[in-house]
Structure formats: C-alpha cells, structure tokens
Image (cartoon, rainbow over all chains, first blue to last red; front, top):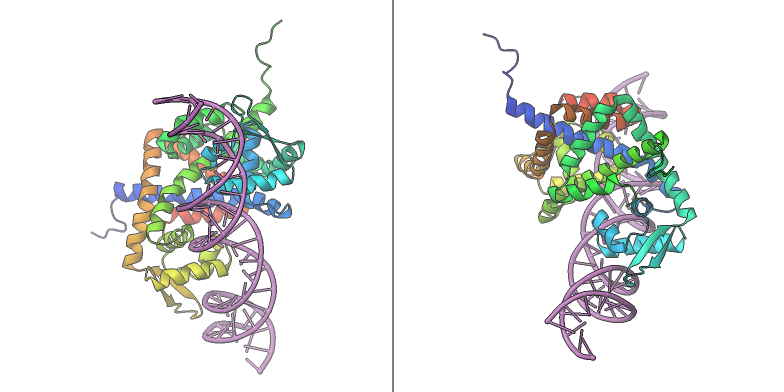
Length: 166
Length: 166
DNA sequence: TGACAATGTCAGCAATGCTGACCTATTTTA
DNA sequence: TAAAATAGGTCAGCATTGCTGACATTGTCA
C-alpha cells in the first residue's frame, strides 16, 4: 500500500500549468527586451523611446492620441519621450489636414535607421524561435497571446497587427 | 495587365510576420501585468515586489543569489525590495544550514496570501486564454516562448519551470 | 592566516511612470 | 455665434525601479 506519488490531481496540474505559462512569459520578455535595452544605452535613450519609435514606424501618420492608446501611458510620459525624439530628429510631425489640432507623427530617415537597428535583433530572436518550432507552434503562440489580451482590446489589436501600417 | 496587388514577396511576409510577433508580445505583456500592478498599488508595493514574492513562493528556501539569477537585476535593487517584504513580514529568512552566509528565503503565511491574491488574476487570464485556444496552441505557445529565451538560459529555465518548487 | 564568496548597505543618479493643474488652439455643437 | 469638447502641451512634484561604485560583514576553505 505504499504510494510513491499522490494520484494525479487535475486541479493541481492545472494550477501548475498556468504558473509555467506565467513564468515563461516573464523569462521570455526579460530576454526579449534585454538586447535592445543595451543598444538604447549607447544612444542615451530608454525603452520608452524604442516603443514610441517602433509604433510610429509601424503606423506612420498616426496622432499622439493614437500612440497613447497603444502604449497605455499618460500623455505627460509620452510627451517627454516625443520631445527627445523630435529634438534629435528621429521623428517629425505634421499637423493634421482635416483637424489641425492633431500632430501626425512620422519617422525621419534617421529614425527609420535607428528603429531598424533596435528592432533587428528582436526580429532575429523571433526568427530563430519560429524556425526552431515551426508554423503550427507559431500559430498556437499567436492565438494564445491574443487570448491573453483584455477582451476589449482583442479585435482592435488583431486588426492593428494584421494590416501592418494601417 | 492591371495588378491589384504585388506578387507575394516571401521576405516581406517574413518580416511582417516577425513584427506581428513582436507586437503581440508587447500587447500581451502590457495587459498581463496591468491588473496585478493595480492591486499592488493598494498595498503600496511595486511590480518588483510581486516578482520577488512570486519566485520566493515558487522556490522556497532559495538564496538571494539564486533569486538574483532569475530576475537578472542587481543585488542593490533586490535588496531594497527584500527589505520591504521582510519589514512587512511577507517574507522571512533563515540562514543556510550548510553555509550560514546564505539567507534562505521563504514566504510567511501572510506572504503566501498576498502572492495568491496577486497571481490569481494572472492565472485566470492564462486559464481563459488556454481554454479558448486549446492544448495544441498552448504547446506551441510554450515552445515559442522557450525559443525566445537566450540559448544559454533555456535548459535552466526549462528545468526550473518543470519541477515547480524544486 | 589569507583569499574568496555571499550578502548587505550607503550614496548618488537616471529613466519611466504617475497625478494634478493649467494653457492653447481648434473643432463641434447647442 | 458662444459654449463645450477635444487634441495636445507643459510645469511641478513624486514614486518606483533600475544602475554604478565603494565599502563592510561574515563565513568558508585551502
């Protein structure tokens, strides 16, 4: 009557499985951001600058408000970052043609170059992971990440990432 | 001879696919951390406290050095966080039996309770995503996340998450 | 004993985020 | 047309989380 291990407990397994997901997410994000952060230091910029640069490049001509809704930070935070990027001419702005209150944001050539430099390593990391795991895994990866989003965000994000620029 | 769309360019598609991954990662992590951050505010703690709490709960009795190697921050950063958690009796320490320089870290009952409270929402988020996407997707998700890690980290992380506590 | 390891602590600094308050230009609406 | 709403900026102040560097303590081990 010697039990070497308790009978499988589905609730326990489930909890364990969830925690493994949480941890993998932490570890992957930690490594994913590390290299770009290092490069950013050379340019005396921070991760927030990279995020702004990335999404301005991704959605050229978007307004400050739109960028805000993507990053989910306050306008005071983004304002500081945008000021740096404008001063250093990584980003330029044009007032909207329909609504002249809007500032529409674009990368300069300089900005495109920096953005590529920063994102390249991250792309390579994804390329490696995708190559190693195959198309089915990638599809699962994408589905689960979409599932992790706030439900209210999903449709919007799905649309946003699918049509690249706009 | 009217081409409505350019011929599929595999290199372009690839780049696009990689960027979609990068973005999904950003969006998912943003939403994943948001709720716990809100709860942390009520307790006057920050995300770093949650991370420490989480991993101390996950690996009871680990040393400060081990925690450091997981979080990849400096000892000065972790020290501040641990001081708070010790003062507020979420964490307790016992000096190592073999090597008494080591501080072995454990959650108190209070700490376990807080950790559960903080992690629960995140678990629920994962549970929802897993439920919605199914076992195959989850497997792909896990594989890709592992693939995103620094190669040098993979074996260690894989082992660490698989045997839960130790 | 002396070298090394694990840890802590102090000081100072920077990036990022927050809130609140207030300002301007412009557009929309009653 | 006047009032309200919107897009955005800015200033001040504050907290958290990191970082570096320097130095101290306490053990272990050769």
